[in-house]
Image 1 (tube, rainbow, N blue to C red):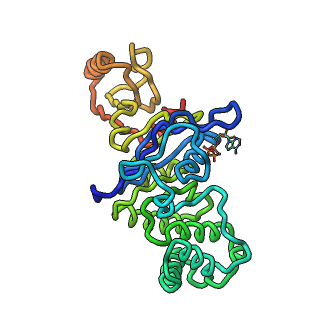
Image 2: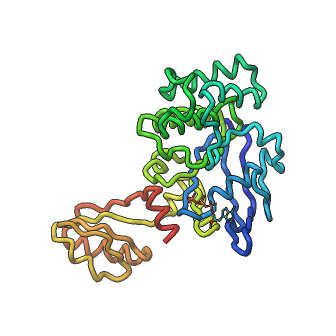
Length: 298
Ligand SMILES: Nc1ncnc2c1ncn2[C@@H]1O[C@H](COP(=O)(O)OP(=O)(O)OP(=O)(O)O)[C@@H](O)[C@H]1O
């Protein structure tokens, strides 16, 4: 990670639609070089937040900061943005539109064509450069959208559900391309409902529910703060763990139980009881990010 690369900060961001507050004093940081997953149920406020970051929707309160100061439209012009409403032209050939977009972002025609062709090639669309967008399958159209957001070396990436509709091979190409960017210090914010991908990809996570941040931080911090679960195995059937004070039993299978303790005293008590039954295993289970998400929105 390049520590000198800028961070994107969202501070107290608020947006109302009529009397509904869709985004309510939302704050988080997308650190340079970190892949930050933005998760939350339908209607949680992810798209609205991203639109405010990109300046396509007015901010009612709070601010977006880039590189330690209020963001400008010139900063935003250097970002790669994949909006929810995809916005490429169905009737235009794939390569032509990417070249056009590259030129809008200040690239020469030649550079834009070279970079667009390379990105499309990496997405397996090297043979489709002259096809109209509408002639491509939805998943392939999505690949073109992704390529559009990556043109011209973006300073930050704001991607609204970039993985939806992509097959596993396209997901892998996309992950490689995004990792290349984060290695250069680019902050990446992407929303997704695919928690398995979020687990696999994220360095940081922001969980939104009802327009508010429920959890935010690096994966390591969130995992350390997440529910402390243990696997306990003794020589006996694990049914005995049921009814122990301060112990929530999440699963029992033969001699093994998965438990969560209310506090340290409950844990010590159970360990003593387990020792009397021939304790063979007591392992802390590190929560996955999807478990942290589920816990946060419960
Ligand atoms: N232009 C609008 N006018 C009125 N209400 C809106 C508008 N845009 C969003 N909303 C409302 O704001 C809330 C947040 O919507 P938003 O699209 O940001 O959620 P989201 O987390 O992106 O959801 P999804 O996962 O379904 O894309 C919802 O209740 C939505 O109905």
